[in-house]
Image 1 (cartoon, rainbow, N blue to C red):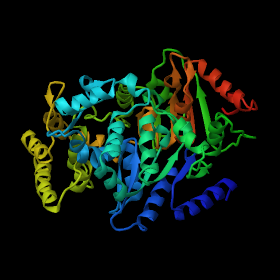
Image 2 (image 1 turned 120 degrees about the vertical axis):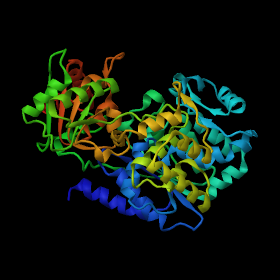
Image 3 (image 1 turned 120 degrees about the horizontal axis):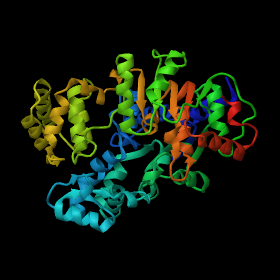
Image 4 (image 1 turned 30 degrees about the vertical axis):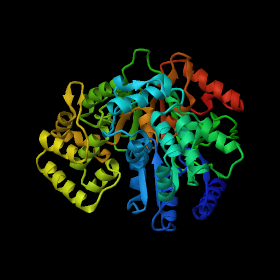
Amino acid sequence: MSDIATHDKNVKKELLEYQGNILILANAGSGKTTFLTEKLKSDSKKLDNYQKLAAITFTRNATEEIKQKLVDIPDNVVVSTIDSFLDKEIILPFINQKYEIQTSVQFSFRIEHKFSHYSIGIRQILQDGIFGTYDFPTSQQGKNFKCEVALDILKTIDSASEYIKYKFNTLYIDEFQDCDQSMNDLFLYLKNELGIYLFIVGDDKQSIYQWRGASPKYINNLWKNKNDFRKERFIGNFRSLPRIVDFSLALTPKVIIDNIREEGSILYLEPNQDYLKEDVIKYLIDNGDINLQEENYFLIGNNKDIEETVTNLNDIFLNKFDCVRKNPFIECTNSIFLECIAKYYFLDDFSEYDVLNNLFPEYNDEFRKELLKKLNRLRQQPTQSLIAEIASYLDVLITNYEDKLESQILLEILSNLDNKKLFDTNLMSNNLIMTTHGSKGLAADTVVIFVEYLIDRYKQELKFEDHYVAITRAKSKVIIIDNQTIYTNEINRFLRSNNGKFSFEDFI
């Protein structure tokens, strides 16, 4: 066993027994999410009967990954996105108490419900019962309205802070480098003022959401500053072959590598300026560089280009390719409700408990059984009126999105069995075309990167964090497709600024 592997193994063994605040900086492929689930399982056996643990993520994909790794989720463990956690545990139970409003609150991401100041958002809640979000310039400054409201509730409503403090022993936060200022403030308040332990893992090199106000500085500040966190590094990458690891580390500031190992491969192609992506991919397949029987990711920067490329490739290779499609409900007011009902309809292992845990803060067994009857009727024969009935039962007010009722939008999704792929990735091909952001947390044998999408078109610079995420998705092979000479110049700039020992040509 290598020194790195021994180090990581010994540290993980110690941390499983440690009770207190923990901060882990971990390289891509080091097994940080797997360890988080191991720690969750271990700690769940040590709790008082009235307490719970909460695993909090920033995306629904990450939530599903943790649930899959847990397999059987202990009764005293909650796994959710930060949005769902705040909705269920703080905002919905206590917002009426905070603002003395009588109506139920509806969450909305629609542009007409966005605003630039906290006071405007509060006024919208009070007047219209609509809980909106900050507009893009404000969110880009690291502000998050939902986190700010939740923090305000905790600071001013004693019953809310007491409820959270006694219910949750520890919060396990994955990918902490994706925190914005408001999230960071909320989590540290829970720790410092309410005494809830934090288990934090992250990798500052994978901070790819800076465009929305996230920043690696929050996890780096916790690492550098004096505090009561036990701090550890997971330094290994057990996902990728050595040559790919060496390439990723050689580009990383303050990391020095002495040699380039041979196992693993990095290929570099320079097609013509006006190339078609499907032609390049066909060339790689015909040349034997890509095996369609293995897992392959093709990283393309926007959904329009992804859909066009998938369509063209499937005309050539008879439906061998899939793409990770955008959640069809993401911009709807009741997106969580719509997604939960769709998952219940399409997925056998998504139960009425999952629906309730995502939507309803508290429920009894009688309420659950009645909901189950309605959901089973939906599985037999979905109708718009039945969707409306279920929504009403769950206190969800159906609204319009782009001149369509949300119940109609959901029915259209349920009426086409091909849409099961939207919620069950196991049905997808081994050959997935997706964005770099969509690939985060995943891994494939071969990763093909179209680097034109990794160049900041305004600054004409390589986006280091996006590039790091892209190359570290690959287990065995990275194939770089470059129609912009700026890429090689940028890679060599990173290499020179780190140690000057290698050039890009040494890796390919």
